[in-house]
Length: 368
Image 1 (cartoon, rainbow, N blue to C red):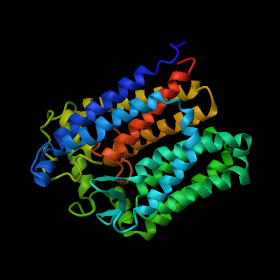
Image 2: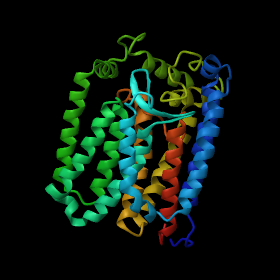
Image 3: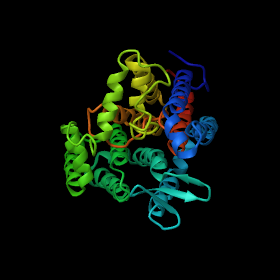
Image 4: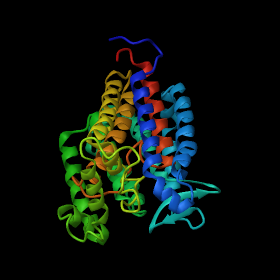
């Protein structure tokens, strides 16, 4: 079906807005106890997410959807290189901020942000521009695969040093989705998959906390007061919600039982308060987002637009999938947050900029 020229995908825009509202409501509810304990204000996390995440994010999304997406192709390389500099700065005393043993933040005066959230967008734009320029050479071993692995190697080294294995997993999947769509050979993809599995087990073996997470995944009953505490409390919250939930605001686990109730554990609070029905509504919104994003990729007018659309859609959907499957015990815990829903201004702002770019690509599609 033909669409009005220069009109963006309204279904995608409405779905994104619905996810943001859903997130604000749940942060307001899930964050009451932890906000009161830490800051003396039960709505601190809600206010912070609204004023430092939602409002600036919507503003930048509006700007991004007005800018012709080909602009990002022109600045893709310097944007990516700047991001690599930021990834290095997190280790510089005075600029990098170390929290709970991880160096993932840069502090600039009163503001702080996570360069890895910016990286999810910058690597999509860079790989899309680079692989479009390669065309047939992208499938070649020396012209395509080796440089691609070198890019991932540099990025991977800087992220593992933080360390942030969950984010690295998301970025690898995003990158492989773009590389696959660009015309990569199946044997190259299978080789990378095997290499990734080997790297995963090596990283698990060399860090005890990763091995602990894997053991708890295999045996959740082990050490329920130690390394198994979060997943056991999360499963208790999910099970308590049943079909319709205990009611919005009536979670018991958020009262100092469930770690990070506004972060990577927020899906457990959703299940406890609004039940399986509410959780399915949320999952349905992500499915709609995926369908619209892939449709935009299908009808994008050029290779760059297709690759960017697939990259952005893969990012949001795969990250949501990791968060939900981890907190429900289907995969080991990763610490990955739920896009648009979990607390985090940096994540929300860059996610909304990405949606703005996706909306601009949809304007150029002849059919939708």
